[in-house]
Length: 111
Length: 110
Image 1 (cartoon, helix red, strand yellow):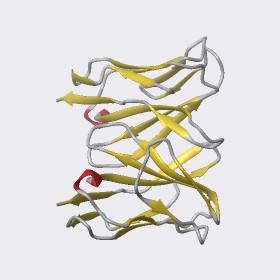
Image 2: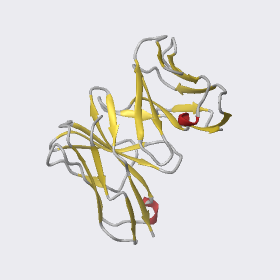
Image 3: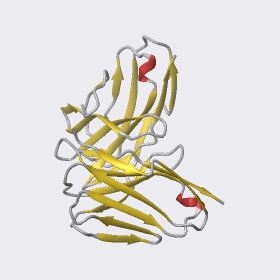
Image 4: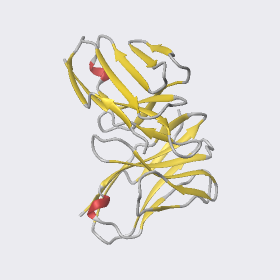
């Protein structure tokens, strides 16, 4: 079945350090999305990547889609306490308009 | 941002009770979803709907049922709650390719 794994599962960083979460799919993805869920909150859409090798930036966040469209990376530079939360990648699921969420990476930022 | 409402936000209920989790959205989105999420874990799709009178089961088998009689309303029902149903239930709607999530219902079955 479909598998979307993220590593690491947990990461603690000192404020100001860089951090990267990786998303790996067992199958080729037509697109990939990233969501952020703050502690106690709900997932919030961040971005969608569609093209092979695509890179998009949002301030300190850089979203990357692999050339083979089977993996994605989200590096965050100079982390801040506002970056705390769980980052999920999501690929197309069963059904034309469904998503299949990855296992998530929970980021803790130590002030 | 879309307005997605879920009630109740928290629910503690005894085994065997029937419960309905409410989800509504005011944006007229056709596509709506229910996810189950255990604390700190990934989201599992349990039901979805692409429009009125359209409902399908998701990737994770669930004993719950859903209905979609109105575009804005997508309730989820558990006929007989069990402790294994303890989890957070998230409702979402979709515009374009983006999913908008409600605040969730944290369900505890004792």
